[in-house]
Image (tube, rainbow, N blue to C red; front, top):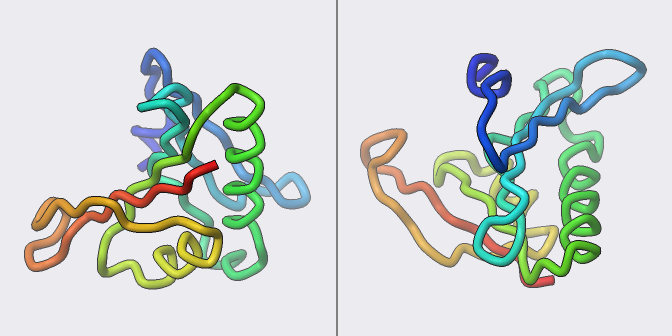
Length: 116
């Protein structure tokens, strides 16, 4: 993941999530993806999970998207990642498509979207 987050790609921005000057997580954002941003590989370190960082990142991305005229925010989550999926659902995201057997056989990757 470190290599992916340090890569340079046109249209993608990388962000560190910090708490008291310590790294708490990171994510990549494709800012103009199908009429709104796409959040790629968001992650919060286990030691600081369940403290509101994920919801804070979602609110920030949504606010930025609205100010840029975005219509929705997209995010992909592994079907087996129940904690992340619940976070997105609690924050208004809904599964709109599934791609089976991408990361792990027998499980789908779910494209989730929130209309703004």
